[in-house]
Length: 135
Image (cartoon, rainbow, N blue to C red; front, side, top):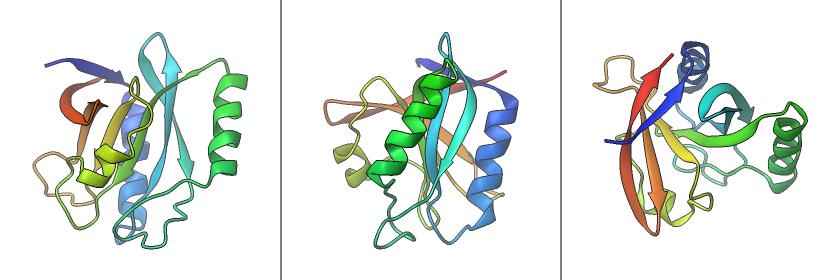
């Protein structure tokens, strides 16, 4: 199984954000250097139905991308939570996976779930799970 590396601090931030408002999908971008995710950039979910989907407003997406570049980082991942479902890519997640080189992290706000955070590579309409290596 291919792997993605992420720091313990970044993982902790994702867990905190998913649980803060567990009824709604949280979302944001993940950035780092040399293939290691070190920073999470939280975004506001502007979707019509935030309990079932997520959307980052284009102007916020552009702002976050500029912030990532200005910090000398690169976009390595995108994350969101699935409040009521299993944290694997939905058909909609696969359809809207516009960044084929990014890892897609899907969070579960349930503390007692078997895997609170999972990561996937989504390319050409297919999702492949990635091993998360915590640093």
